[in-house]
Amino acid sequence: RGSEHGPQGPPCLPALPLIGSLLSLRSPHPPHVLFKVLQGKYGDTYSLMMGSHTVIVVNQHRHAKEVLLKKGKMFAGRPRTVTTDVLTRDGKDIAFGDYSATWKFHRKIVHGALCMFGEGSASIEKIVCAEAQSLCSVLSEAAAGGLALDLSPELTRAVTNVICSLCFNSSYCRGDPEFEAMLDYSQGIVDTVAKDSLVDIFPWLQVFPNADLRLLKQCVSIRDELLQKKYDEHKANYSDHVQRDLLDALLRAKRSAENNNTAEVSAESVGLSDDHLLMTVGDIFGAGVETTTTVLKWAVAYLIHHPHVQRRIQEELDSKVGGGRWPQLGDRGSLPYLEATIREVLRIRPVAPLLIPHVALSDTSIGDYTVRKGTRVIINLWSLHHDEKEWTNPDLFDPGRFLNSDGTGPIIPSSSYLPFGAGVRVCLGEALAKMELFLFLSWILQRFTLSVPPGHALPSLEGKFGVVLQPAKYKAPGPQAPSPPAPVPSLLQRACP
Ligand code: HEM
Ligand code: PLO
Image (cartoon, rainbow, N blue to C red; front, side, top):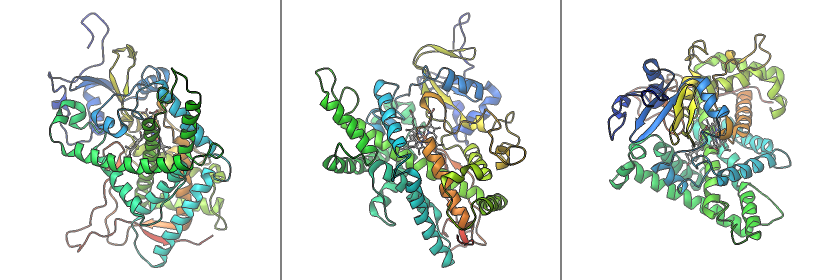
């Protein structure tokens, strides 16, 4: 806090030496929900102590935009934590790496490589549609056999293959052991990294045996092996004349820095070391798999809970696309209700409910509060997306709120909506994710109706907090069930194009 006469920081939760505000943070709620509850007592913006670090929590969109947009550069830092350091070789990636010339350079290379895929024979649209086609044929087989099918691994494989094409120019078949291993390690990482676990609050705890940290290290080493293998293959077949994927784009930047190598400027010093390249591609691959898959799972769960929403999307598809051809990106403008549904899923269950923590790079302010250099800032997107002053019945799933009054076009009805963040640290995959969500959902709903098999419980809408907010695993409906049933929608085939 500021001194008595000097400038004031935001209201602070009670804090004790060493443990900070930990006692006030004990709660059955996940952090994003607890931070919203605390807003009632401490106001929209308040601070707390995590061990020895001051953390400011922002629960309202005006202050959030000041941090992300107006003072974006000032708040563009990232904290270093034990778990993210394990994942990213001490912050040599984009998402968890601090603000630096290297970070900027890597963002630029990735951005360029993703844009390159906008056109041409290997366009993102073609890649996504090929995966949607193969997904739909698996679903067709299941529907024809009257089988309930666990959609999750099929969605995950489709999404993984898109990002695999973009990063590594490769893809996985059903049952591929490398794909299964990837699912395993990635879940282990999501379960243990950057979720304010105690080692991140008290770094000295890492000297004690710690099951989570051990699991994280194990998963990271399996991931690193996979990344290294892709890297070695790419280096062996690299040519300056063809750029097959993101990894080639990174290698090209590295080669060109090496060719211009002078005494002071080496590939290492501009942040193009092997470690940096691997961590950047690891970020994009990891983000590419976990985020979009999670949103698709939420969308499926909400569509099963709200069959009338599903029907309305299908009616829109039937009238605007029909059954004679597949949906394509060009249809996005004529399917406003589907677009509104995607926006509503991203509102009600934001993938990253606390974004990634930001850090003040110099002394600054938020509103009238002073903020010291080094302060961590958490933007609570959950509060923004569930703010009763901005959204009517914020807990209600209602795609209609994202439609204009005559239902002909999608709108954004409140400025308290930032599913991809904003400003210098805005999501790098926003355009890609939106294309994938639109294409996968339109392809699936054109041909199938999703529901749970009769007698089965509806999927849970409860989120499991972590670095991404995942839907809780489907639970068996009753104790009498002999074995857990498939966690699944059943599929009803619709008229085929
Ligand atoms: C960062 C959301 C998909 C790559 C972020 C952030 C959010 C977000 C909220 C944090 C912004 C901040 O800290 O201020 C989402 C959502 C997605 C999605 C909702 C899907 C619907 C993707 C995809 C990729 C990706 C597909 C990869 C191509 C990244 C990267 C960052 C990031 C690299 C870190 C940016 C930085 O720190 O400079 N995303 N994301 N995201 N996202 Fe996404
Ligand atoms: C997901 C598990 C992977 O194995 C590793 C990985 C890399 C990048 C992370 C991603 C995980 C989770 C979602 C993150 C992404 C970077 C940006 C994205 C945090 C941990 C979001 C939503 O901010």
